Length: 251
Image (cartoon, rainbow, N blue to C red; front, side):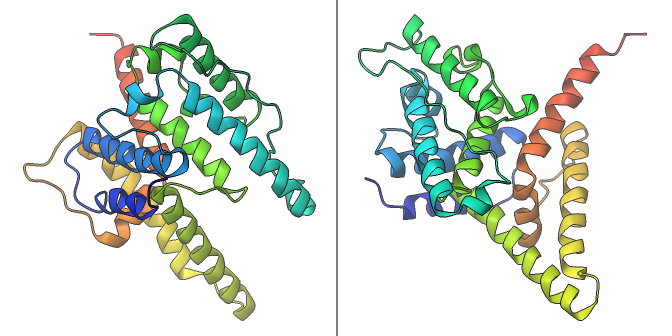
């Protein structure tokens, strides 16, 4: 099994200025690839990301491992599990002699998608379709969905990609600050600033995408973490903006 340090190495590359959403997407694939390599010793990189997962075997295998982790979590923390969406239904899939693009591959991917919708209740805006992976026509939604699956799994104690670990560190810091200030009877200024930062960065990112500046925009390091915290919202808003622009009637 690969060293977990590979995940941090990939994520550290994301703390740099990005000139486009394509560079951001590539950084997410780097992080997810190292995460899957660590969990399952897969032969996968950012460049082979879609090809390595196209048969759906690794996806279904991971889904069932999330179920096992959720079951163990429910036994150890029954009180906490009551307020969480706990998946339980295993994914049936074909794991041998599955050829890329074949009916078996499509069936595996379809079963994984059904599990995401029915067991994790992932929102449609973060979901992908079978052809998005098999025909590689929508990498963005596939990556966002896999990040969300990793995020849910981390709640049950599973290893998470570095981007998700950074999210959790931010959330923990916010909770600590809010707890301290609530005990003192004061508003949590730091947590408010972090949330405001995330909203401003989301808005600024969409504007930069539509009207690029003459030179590359370099984010401050603290603001990078906030941006990663709302990564799925950012890319999803970008997708919805493009769809709405296509639906506008021409004058």
